[in-house]
Amino acid sequence: MQEEIAETLARQKARDELLKRLKKVQTLVNRFAYEEFLPMKEEFDKKNEGKKNVEFTPPKPPDLTNEVAALGLKFEQTELIGFVDELPKVEGLGEAVEFAGDSATQRDIRAVLHSADLYDPLEFLNSQEVYFVAWKVADVPEREPSFGEARELVLAAYRAIKAREPAKEQADRIANSLRDAAGDIAAVREKFPEMESISVPSVPLWSDSAPNSLFGPSRVQPSTLPGMEVPGAELRESVFQMKEGEIIVAANQPQNTYYVILLANREAASLESFARSRTLVEMQVRQELTEQQRMQWLSDLRAETSRGKRRPPSGN
Image (cartoon, rainbow, N blue to C red; front, side, top):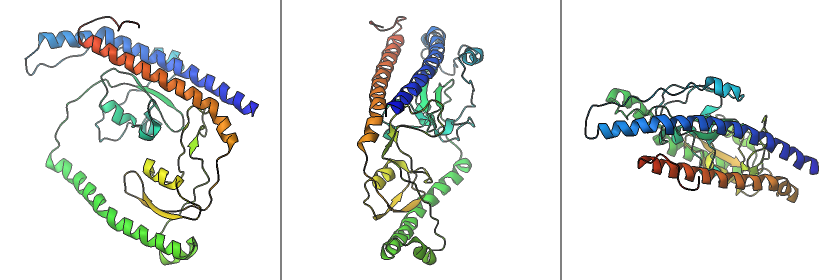
């Protein structure tokens, strides 16, 4: 037990060192935002108040490539993307979610940056515990697509919505057959040969580690369900509320797949597992409180800046 706690603390220390380097990147971006970008934008808005068809030309942002490399981090600039576009092909970026907040309601990086301020560096984390600091460098006005552009997307969405009801009906039929067969999957497969099956290994409700993680466990987070496509919080909660031998039908988050779920085995949580996680939980609570204070400070700083003041809020 002591060796495991010592290992957790050592990994936590390495993780904290990484976060300190990421904070330095955030400081570099914030310096440009508050010393160059925002003052120039405010001056432009004052001079051109009421004028139309006048476009703001922002100052050229600093090239952070060398500074980031000196910190032992990677720097990549993505192309501009819309709210519904595919995420850039940066490894691990597509599944990154906001670092702060309740993990059950965390948004992905695209949803967060869509509503973020320009040059407001934010932290993100993916399931492999790869950390990102990302910020928005441009804000292009929304454009209404032509009928031709939107037609195929609308038709695809309509077909997907219409397919949900028959998919659920088929899943209910398979579930009823599985109940009649007392959980004999092989017997049900003879009746439904198109059925595909996966086996999910035993997983705890919460996890404090991630496979192949360079910095080890960092946060207590909901355990994933391997093999399930975008299971979502609702499906996950349904699974962990099941009784041994129970069979249910549940949809994934986008509701494009309905799963027939048979709980083969259920194990009670152990006190030893809680003891291993206690130190990590305490650290996580402290980090989240610190992050809330930081976000409040940034919010206050923006409010002060918007009123034309050039100094941080009192006490900072």
